[in-house]
Length: 501
Image (cartoon, rainbow, N blue to C red; front, top):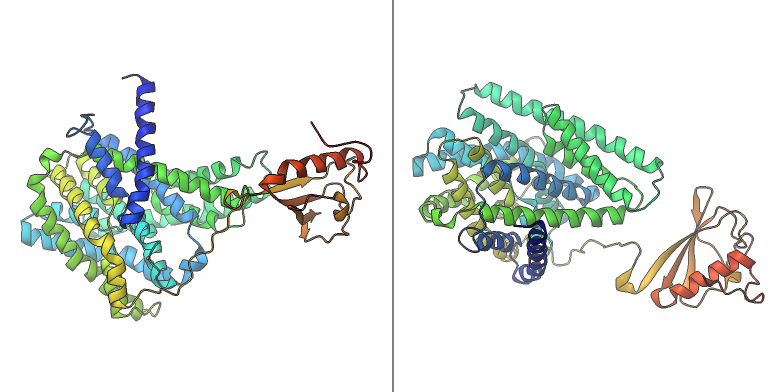
């Protein structure tokens, strides 16, 4: 099929997926289900596009997850999650281990799975999914600490679970000791954390001091730095996911140029990665093979929701109380247990043993696919109801204040940056003498690296930078007036200068 046809199909899928987000938002369902549906429709049971390459799916999936994690770090406000980090770290480590063991034991006893297969399934289903969790939680008012725990946990628990799935998949062919398993996991996490904590501050320092010629380069540079962290950690045999999340978290909370544009760029990249990832996973699935996996999948999913997740929350909460880093009430523990939604990450992780040729891995993929769909349908829409019944919702809690930089389309306004060049007629002109139209105002002057709010009698000087807020309707008039004064001074109009091109 020609490339232009593939581009047309790809663009149509993206547009349809974007439109479906509105449907998902109104229904309270995570949008991932609709994206997976697109993939199933395009796959062998629908249009018939063939795709049966788990190794390629694994590589694409890992890259897409890295983009999603980078966006998660860049858009996470540290002040909101700081108090929740200790408990989130315990949930992402000890809680993950408890969840793996409990679920593996349950499916071994209930379904007769081999121990290694049961452990792989437990590891694949251990991580909560940020995209699935926050597509629901962003509309659900929760106390900051509780929301912070879920947010931070979904960012931190990807790294240990990826390591666990990779090592367990390799264990299916070899038999390393438990001590070696935990030692290797610890080493990879330490290396990943070290790389992330090194690249993040270094990247923030560099971006604050390097004046790039175009504002659009800053978002690209920030995202590239997160992948430098990811690739560097992987080359050092560390956790790339932990490295990229920590780097993004540091960069996202640093005072960098064009922060709002960077966050917007990262959100757009993450949405594109999610759409591509879920559609690809839908293509990879074989509906004709799913019926035999429905019963095992429902049993494993029920064990996950009613046994493994509550056990991990219970043990983690007890440990957090023991070491005096957090106190979690029984109602909060119950909500944390129910709110551990699964999404694309378990499905992507299920491609790892499949690509490694582990016995029974295709069945694991099918079961995980069913679990994600069914239990997301059950868990996602019921979260608001469960939060109200448990008394953990906070209807009076203020939502995050959204701050957007120019252009301000929704306000029908623009923010202009004006630099006074050498020899400009603007030098020495007082602000009121600019005679800007009624819909415009000089709101800030940056002089010698220091900024201040000007008065009407403030004189602008060469090398000053002015920030001018103007309505969209009079922007052209403002630009013409500034050009005119720059050319002929404050009496430009008297000289007949109108600032026209």
